Length: 140
Image (cartoon, rainbow, N blue to C red):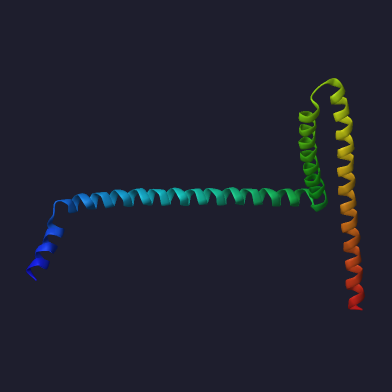
């Protein structure tokens, strides 16, 4: 009993206790500041996403669905064309003959992408009209 009380009084009355407490407080401050930084980063990401969504909705409502999809597809095509052009430039070089050949290849590639995009839109319209007709017939 005397040993236990002596040991406990040594642990709590030692001069290191105040120092340990200040270290704990320092760690607590560091952890709280890190948590605050993470929370503010999450809030910034959320605000950025909200801004992107708002921009998307504004574009969609101002342009309409058809124009919005057309521009979206056009942007995708332009990106693919730029990637293809960079690939061809790396492979073929930048001599005048190579540039002329690259231009014709780019024009053919772009035409093919536009045709695929148009065919895809046409087939989706046909499928939609078939689905509408099927659902109408099923209701009858």
